[in-house]
Image (cartoon, rainbow, N blue to C red; front, side, top):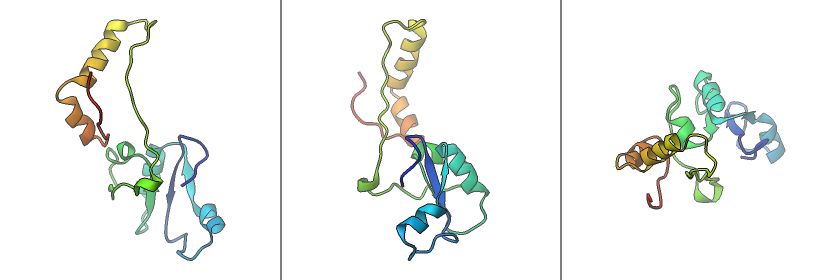
Length: 124
């Protein structure tokens, strides 16, 4: 669903949106949140059945009171790509190097995948 910016997330309730509603009516009933955690907190507090929130998997899994139903179809995906690099002018290079090394450690891929990240590519 569209948002107010790159960080916005949405949630809606079928009790407020009928399947036959035109696009503008549906959009007027969607609630936008500043981030996925806010959307999931709202969703966890609802008591309706079939309420739905759309955000990153990594913002769904750690929240109690909501259940991850599955990914959106590929044509609706907006995947975030996360990378790591050491800035040439980093004030504390050893700390940054240690952090990056932990991301590359043998057990890190499994932990990241468990948290909802799709781990691809190679660890350099």
